Length: 356
Image (cartoon, rainbow, N blue to C red; front, side):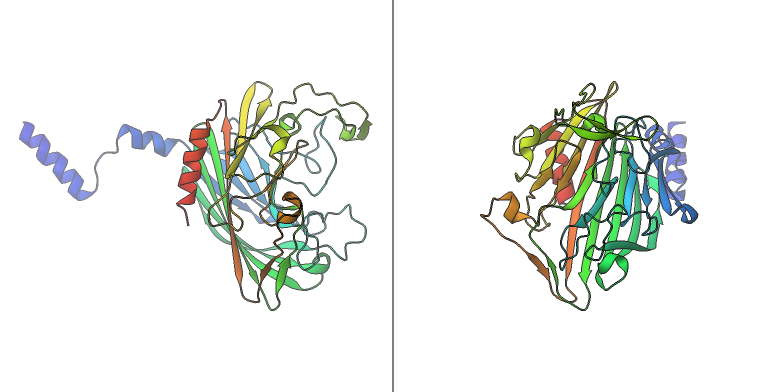
């Protein structure tokens, strides 16, 4: 009887019809990532087990001057990105309307400002626009999904010359309480040299929800429950819990202008502990990057702004010759419900470094 069972098992294996293990069945039921293209809505929804995680959002130039991931959620469905100006929420700041979701652009590309461009600017002749041009690959899966897109970096508010062609791959991961996004972007200069001037505003960034900002007593303008902007002279820091922590051991807003492999922003939204960590890649220019991380919710890595961050000790002014490319790689780790140790982030950074 025992030999009969052995022969049966062997036959199933050879036939490729072996009954899946319990673990395999569980994996097939959990963390299924779907990418749903909605061209009429100008977005690609990213769903985990049928629930929204984020969306690749590429509206027309008259609405937004670059494609972004927006909004972004934790594994519990909590939105970690600021809603303004598309999803207004009571108590949010209304500064910097170009800070939307997660994005990659730069303040000075051949003298054109791609970072600060928005519909709030009146004279946009010296501003650049990143225009989505295509969806090249859409592949869902269990625990991992891939989206490949293209875009053009165009000067004179999208009405002039194309300076750079962009090819971007997004890798989306889901496992238990953690969500991850890898962004790999290749920028290729076309028929002219391209200079990324050494400036402050860039390069890879996310604008977080109000609750994840650092507490502040500076006056500002906020939106009320009806979407009306209101100036507030003294800020209410109730529920404002953000705290930066760098791989270099530096905490709080002091991480600004320091170098490090990663920076983590932790805090709470209601009773949910949330951590957002951006990880640099060893193949990126100026590794480890400078951090342009501000207490008011802008969380950015800028490897190209050496002069301002080093107080004049370094100058970069990175250039691409015609036909030359620059590839940038960033990983964002979003964890819900627990504190993440430095050791875990170091391991995730090591794994990311092994991805070429």
